[in-house]
Image 1 (cartoon, rainbow, N blue to C red):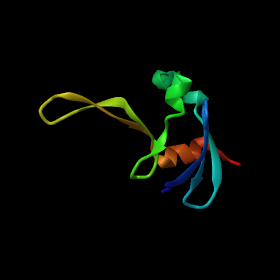
Image 2 (cartoon, rainbow, N blue to C red):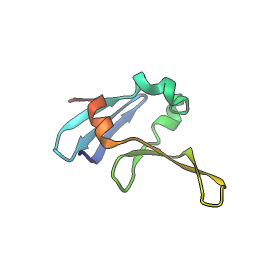
Image 3 (cartoon, helix red, strand yellow):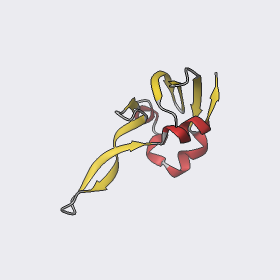
Length: 90
């Protein structure tokens, strides 16, 4: 299992991070942009931050259902293991 320690650089549509194993890796999101069209907007894409897990997240881009059935904004995030597999060592 991997976690992301820090974000080094964000550019549309790549993010360079340091994983817990000390590797600096670049994640290319171009292959999955068709599945997440909201990330195609450069200003939205570059707003990525780390959450408490920690992994990359975009605040308010997903939706979730509360226990009472109300739909509310939620962060869009990705498994850090998936991001590691998508990345290449820099």
